[in-house]
Image 1 (tube, rainbow, N blue to C red):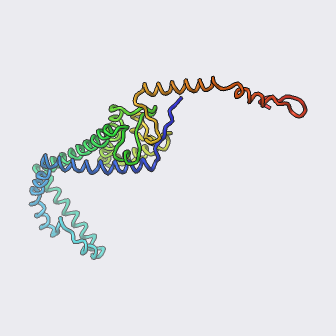
Image 2 (image 1 turned 45 degrees about the horizontal axis):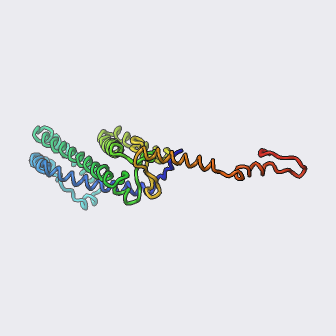
Image 3 (image 1 turned 90 degrees about the horizontal axis):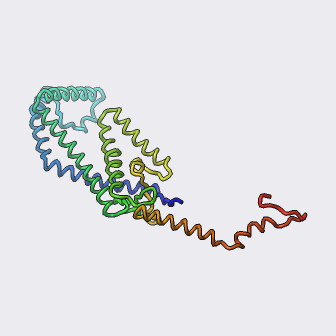
Length: 287
């Protein structure tokens, strides 16, 4: 005997995902800004800009071009040949500036430190937002409900109908959703064309998994052996023991119902099958 799974409606799941994604983004952005403020990333960026400013001024004077401001109105009014010449000049000036900056070890060190701090702050922001909204909050709301799932009446349970534990929720939300489906995909996008293709394939795999699985599960659902269901109509057991007791009781009730069936009810099909035909011969149930 199995437990009936009231799997969630696709559009409800999509809407819940959209709400959760927006919430995660804004919390991650807030943590990112806070982290940058604490470690002084803005001051580091300003120090870098101050270091390269003399190089920029020198290159602009050499090529008679402004590298920080382009008058878009004048640019659109240029003839095609003049626009192409301007683009070539701008590209050449940028390359000259890059060479000057790359030759300055202090400027390179400042840039690398700023980039490292920015990436670290972004990762911390994503981890913190996932930990807060996709792990701690579902533990508080019960049944694996995030803001989106709570809004649309959805829940997460084990595929056997048992409530998700903290360990299962961590595996689903943090390892599957955050590490594999978010951070790993973002990291792959920085690895050039191969990384971008790989990241795209992961998304295609995600869609394929949801279409092919009977419960429309995602990758993180398969990892944690969970399923998203309609909370209002789904029976969710607190423990494995409660589920086992329920199934045992169901089995006993089914057996008792069969044993208590009246003789008339049991013999009715047989009697109907043994009615004589018009020519006086009896027919079997197979006739």
